[in-house]
Image (cartoon, rainbow, N blue to C red):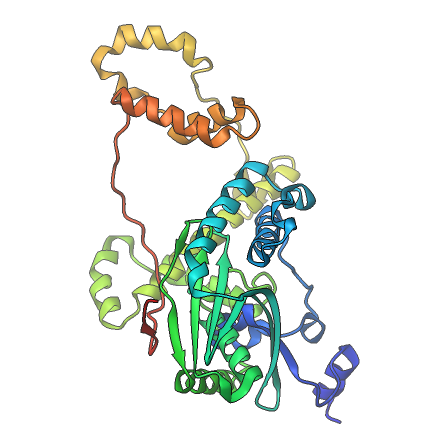
Length: 396
Ligand code: SF4
């Protein structure tokens, strides 16, 4: 037995045992084989999703499972069980119920939370739990509920579910229809249809990824990877991003953009900017903490860093300042005063009775609208997305 195999065996996996990949991790695995490395093989700590967003996702998924079954537990309040915000949970469940009603005609005899496990090649076993699966003749319909804010492309994950179902049921399945029910936005996208040939091509793609599974490929997909804070390749990308940006002459950035565009490097530049911003923010706050812990002064050769306290003036009471400003600024008030609509709505929501938060926020917005006090201002958001290849669009 070679050393690596012995180490893996000692840490958990035995020789010949397949590598188990959760289908939800498949999209990242296709981009970077190392993203599914087991913590016991890398010696890194295991990081599992926790926090309010993950708990909310579990609560709403549980509600939807009972809704799909149509059983009595569909009215159970899972918000209490998972300790999540009741109002948000209620709103998401309402949207989920609506989506289910929209999708139901296409998915008779559906069963929720369907566990699948299938071998791909000699070394990989894909495992997952499909939110909704229904078989109608030679067609398998699959729905994946999304409750988070992620704009990650969901189709590789869905294709993984489709592949697992088709391979489990064998030759009977000629087509899988994959639907995403985005509960947060209340939108169900038209199903993607995968034929047997599409699934064969997808399986070949997975097998190619298996062959390069020992390779680190850092990129946008590192966001959300359970190894992102421990993986040297990702940390190195952060260092390189900082180096690239600091080496750039600020005066000449605009001149370099067309060349980067011609080299198809603009997405890399944007990724580098995001990473550099994050790294710079953490670095600045850590330096400040270090200096603070050292009596607020650190000497470095002939330079020193001092944490100095400065005072800035701030309006302490808006209600007291209001009449004074009105008198002095008159029609120019809007130049000096800005109002956060989100904060105003949050306050009105927090003052409302339980279960009435959403309505109270909407009522405030309606009142401000009626007074002609609200404007809609367009703004641009830059996002980098992968362009889907090979899949065909279709509607039921
Ligand atoms: S952090 Fe990025 S490079 Fe590192 S294993 Fe995860 S996906 Fe791969």
